[in-house]
Length: 442
Image (cartoon, rainbow, N blue to C red; front, side):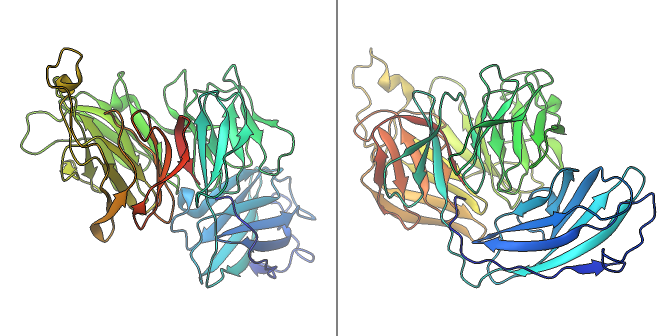
């Protein structure tokens, strides 16, 4: 989220398992406790800062935790390099007291843990941003509420990721380095080198970065504050063919691949499993995947044969059978946020042969989008929509804000361009008539 500062709180440090760092006498094989540990809050995020120990063994890293850890990547545990002096946590719940701990890690032992507490405001006013890639490869930021024009925040990109304070990350031209474009507009710098990147960078709410290694084919993660990537998900089970993957706001990686008869879903902390479509001898061709932070996976399936239909299904936590989401076949646009899944569908649909140049009748159907379907923890709901018409058939994945606004790029027809559909429905808003890809709200 690209946030305005709401409140700041400096909290006195509490010591767990020992006396204050100024008078502690740590073992020579363990680092001392961090000094001057504080937490400051901004909207629904908090940043913990600390100083180096005054005594003890050499620090080789830091372990920083948050509790409660709901909605946090890595179950609320961050492991940072020795040079780190701060850590940021986002997506905090209003009017909640959080405990943050900081502990120095040494080569042989760990030092004492320092604990600080922070209570979030009862009302958290945050503003997210929409990021998208234009046809020239520029990363453009739009206000989530649709106000103002888009602003170029990074250029010459083939892909990008962003964090919740507005920093942007792009792969270098040779795809061996990650470039960091600060939200404050200061100079671009290199964040990490010696990598095997693809253009498809992803991020979570904390700003950890993810990509599929172009050599090993595994999903890599670059933690915030680190220049060393680690493997977080082996994609071998999904086969050597085309695969699709996503990262949830809380840092869960999900991928789908395999054959049209028996696609495979894998994820961090989740056993690989084949998925089925009840009442069918096969499933179809996976075309896209989305996921929320409740363990639900949403898979887009392209039908076998020439009909040219794409349909979204829900795979509930632990399940192997897909559940159909859609009330009708349609030209459509899908998006997911931490809480669930949203779908924009045209009023009518035609099969692909009707669009062939040799078709005598053509595809003369109503492509206006009359409603938005939402699938969340409380079930399904629908709100009326107006002012937007669907373009071509396909997976057409967009992005959704925390509040439920949906953003979609329409490639053709009377509504060609970038659109925002409010969470409450009503008139859709065109943000731009230009074409954009790789939509991200954070």
